[in-house]
Image (tube, rainbow, N blue to C red; front, side, top):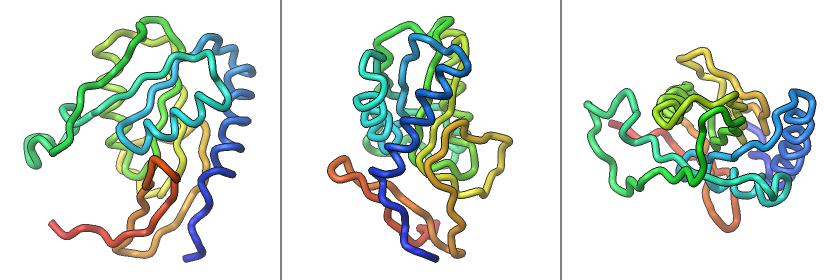
Amino acid sequence: MDALPEVDPLLQRMGEELTAWLDRNQRTDPAVVGIHTGGAWVAERLRDRFLPDAPLGSLDIAFYRDDFAQIGLQPGVRPSELPFSVEDRHLVLVDDVLMTGRTIRAALNELFDYGRPASVTLVTLVDIESRELPIRADILGASLALPPGQRVKLTGPEPLQLTLNPVAKP
């Protein structure tokens, strides 16, 4: 596999595409929601650079995972923070790595427990293209094909960097 892409140029392009997407689709006054942890880092950067007036929230989807019964509560679970109403609001949902689609499904379930948004625009830094659910990003930083037994991880918060790691054995 070639070297992993640098995060800052991806964020710049994603932010430009996101603001154009929101304008084109008339999604005014959006709120930005990042999925803990990497998605929250990316969401904060995008909001600060491109949507400075948008409120920022974060989700910890630990209780919404479909494997919660098997793996139990993971250390470091923190409460979700949505300091705004999601009801009839345009939301920009941000995650770092889109792989199976299960994290996004869990995040959508949690968001809808808070209310019914007007729309949800999905933004992801990296797509690994090993989908188990029919979910795709509206705004995407990079699409990667990984060697078997590898996964990509966003480390941060300073600096934000993509790393390639072996898949942990169960």
